[in-house]
Length: 490
Length: 65
Image (tube, rainbow over all chains, first blue to last red; front, side, top):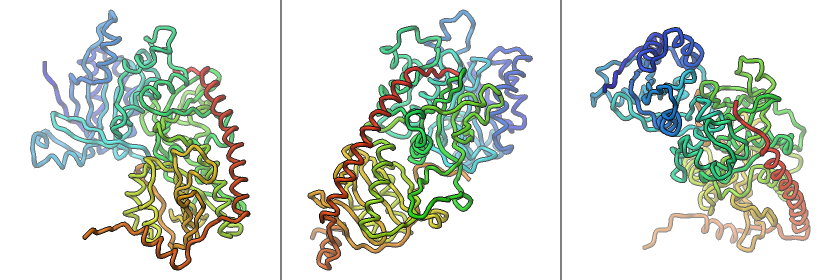
């Protein structure tokens, strides 16, 4: 058996892909045209016109193979075992660029990811990792991880967020979001492992009272349970319970670089999708209209979020209030996000709601203690790993050593909450004039216990060995805000 | 000779000498801390209810579309 390889510009994509669907998946020409128009074209249309496709047949895709052996192979119909892999390059490439040491870095620079087509028609879009750099329109910040893959026998890497469409039999939206979350965390952090459809079935076996395949979707609790089984300290937030805070808490987790599973529903639809980033906030155009003396939550700024939705290509934009904005089908229009599930690191004991409550209250006392009368503050709250935070601080040229030393040499847990203090004007320049760093492992919020360090108006405030609140006079200037939880694509 | 490059400890000693370190340790600050404790205690209890209710209602929502 051979691997057939083709190179064509994306503008010839339709002819190439429909031909391969006929030849390799044994789909009639009428059906391939329909499938291309309905399920593939929308993915291609979002890619730059300069994209070149390198298409390989007889590709063994680990996710589809798993579904094949645990489900499709037991059917009467002849489901193929092999997939088609479409690799994306930005700009012209040719056969001579491959298997050529001199051209490797040229190809790697142009490489923009891949899309697998699986023989589960009509829903043929399988596992795909596409770099946002391949898109015609970006201007957003998103979670990304680095993935290692091969093209024409050579190894390449791409940064992106994992995506797949559902096949509606082994993976519905619920399983697809679980798979994508684990694919993301498993490739990014050594604490987690990527998963497969059969592993999801296995993880949920002990709390399932009916057959699990074909899939009927999952309850929100089952999604949460599966994530717990895969090593997370999961939390569920309901709009009914958190009402006005719900959207801001979701935004806070996204600002923290943690993708969340959102549950979008109306009277007839219940759909799982991922929130993975947000549109770039142009603070100069944002209306930060709040009363003098108030503390404004930066996470409350209205913006489009970036979604990973298995019914659409990756990186969809929509406001949190109307998440189905990119759906053309009228049945989805009134869908709302009523729940979200956060895959937290198990030792983050202080969640976003308690962290926000503590930070806002603490800041009010701090301002009082430091005799700062009536300042209008913009507070930017997010989680960060100590490693990334300290690495960024170490290289932050705008931060003076006086403050840097206190931040760098303070003992911190693996994850910390950061509340950056800014003003209406400063935030427009992405600058802060103060910071509160507190402990994400400290659930006991009494006696100022979570505080690691606060710095504002030339004062550094921390706790001494006996837990007494201590003020040190340490002059420092304004500094650039932390923007390393999400990756920006202009 | 040991070459210590960290500086925070030395800076703190210097600040102490220059009397640039003080404590929020009067009655006013103690009362503020107790006030904050009470606020957080109530917030924590309310949060527990929200957490539980979120979990209970989420058990009824099927995601399959």
